[in-house]
Length: 306
Ligand code: 0GY
Image (cartoon, rainbow, N blue to C red; front, side, top):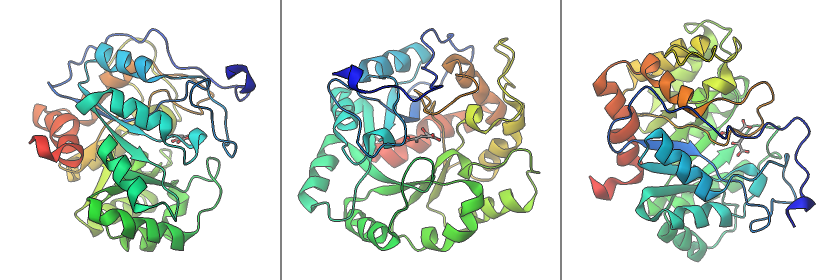
């Protein structure tokens, strides 16, 4: 059955032997952005998907969690599964209280279905505006979904590229629930951190005090490329000033995750251990690390455990 899905040409599979990080994560750390793919034989990919990945199962994700030293995961529905949240929900349920989920929800989804997702551990929906990943979304429908999830106390994860922000900002600011921005709004890191593009992004975070930011995906944003495999903390140097700026200004609204299994990378596949070793370069103090990796994600995804 899996052979029905032919991987996208050039697709890089996830790293099977990541190093053990030198940076020891604080106790209770959360990997707040990761995915599962399939396995396709059990959870087929969506017909409307824009890419066909390799399998990346819940058990493989949990093994990585333990290897890196994380305690919990936030599993974000990947676009290759469309709005069929079964693989993600199965993974979240299997992890017990150690995972939460972010779903894809289409307009017209029933309140009963949302309650079922909530009971399974879903705490948010993702609105994706990255054109290579999804078809254009009807804004009215998204607004409807936002209003429908508000009573559940969920939030919306937004994924967009920096050049799209000026057009989307007013829509985002009008949404009635907290927002979580993926990958710092995907800045062009060849531009100055003090330039108009990234200042516009920081202004979005400044506009409301319930907008959170994932300081994630240096491997996706870097232009300089991967580090030499030395394990040094300052890998992905060109992304550091951007993430550092966000952590400094919004220490209580930042999250971090691996983005395992790293969809759609074509240049290099990161060693997840080295990604963890990148964290101290963007959050150098113990207080910043505790907020980024434990306190913030716990407040957003496990408030009942605080
Ligand atoms: C990410 C980034 C990407 C893909 C997806 O759901 C997805 O397919 O999120 C991407 O290709 O940039 O966050 O995993």
